[in-house]
Length: 256
Image (tube, rainbow, N blue to C red):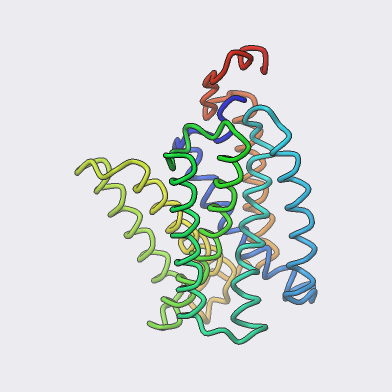
């Protein structure tokens, strides 16, 4: 197989943040605006996620539409997983955050022990792809829990939270580009932090002006960001600007 994960270009990070925003706003739209409730929303979006992950695994190369649709639904389901534990089961946010942090560490440890690398540039076997998507899911759940914990702990406004998480990502970028912090570590730290950044962006856009937001509502925010994701995915499908297209086997030349 060819490498099935896009290169971490500026397009990658833009769409990732858009996906995390949709994960927050669209889950709220289904759960609250449409009145589905957390369990029903979780099962419905989870079923759709399974369908797209099956298609993603069956593909032999990186397909932008399959990959980013899977990310959108993992963002939604990951958000709902945390919301289910905290809102439905009453698990405190510190404990939820700790559970997902430990789970992420375990996934990384097993992944590295099994494959010898955590790099996104060699996702070319079913095993590595399984580890990759499991890691992505846990990072979304962890980012949701940690972001909600920080916002509630310090009673932050959506804009203040957005600026804090943006600053944290900037610190990671400076550490990587300015001080040569390990690329794999930098990538996954930024990946985790984009989740609360996107959630804060969604809250800022959707929340009422009296609560420090712009008052767009979850419906408008969700559809605006979904439209932006679709436009960028179409662009990347045409241009292939983020595809690594690395040949990794004797038959790979025939895979395209």
